[in-house]
Length: 437
Image (cartoon, rainbow, N blue to C red; front, side):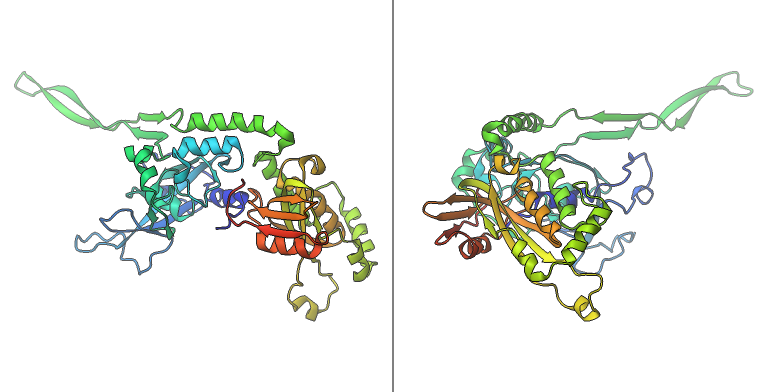
């Protein structure tokens, strides 16, 4: 599989966060549910497990509000609201990441092949269906850690993600999973109102001279709120955060995987590669227009001579990015030109050490090249990354791994570009597994 950008996946998950997430204060479901930020799926009404969840029912729905006991819907609506998404923690590429994976799954054999990071998510249930949280998040591509039934651990079949996983019987029998599923799922908050209570009032019976008791039902207005301070995985996340800071200081950050600063740099590069009214490096609109005037005075052939090298590799094992650049269309292009298909992109491959590019992340490797290409009037996109082990004396370049921020590059294409535009006689090989060695 080809891992997508972790940043894009986080954005997709965060898109379900509701603008306001009120507590369930006794209101009816139809009063509580706000369509914004609601995650909606449909559960097949079946006694079998694991359950089948779909983003849309494959058959027309029977009225979900039908009251007749003879009418049962084959698909039940499931609603939940995402209230919080934490920071991503990587599980591949460094000692801290590998240690976290071992702590969460108990054995690397059970980590799904396409899983490269974990994130803590808080949700609020708006309906109560069997396996609802597990099934809905799995259907969206975010299975729970350790949830073998829904794709969160290897060795089983997930009905929602169409993934067939190999069973490792020996590892299974000797792992914590043989003692029961250790799901990364815990109730973190519970709110409910005290039950109604009865009070007794003594009243005097007329003409009898005796008192009697009258019972009255009183509605409680006291809410009880309970919060979980930490989950079973919290100490492992805390240890990871401490370890990742220390590893970021080792060998100039060579083993750094991802961080909030990396996420910020990637978002900046995306805007910088497709600038609108202002460059993020501080260039004003007027300066930008002056730059475009200069570019317009240079014909296409001269611009091509100003382009940077298509391939630039630093000897050793370093992170790489592959970048696509397309010439911008001018405002005065003819209608025929405007309707013509996009020109084929120019592709550039870069690998660099942290000391060369000013930081340990793929965004640092891409930064200077993105700025250079945009200054020449190109729309620029970083389409992927990974690592390249380059031996300049062989010469040989081995392409592998992936980028947390930009996703996995097309390693076969990168190897082809290296052989076509790299140093004379260089041989390029590639490995499409998700291993970072």
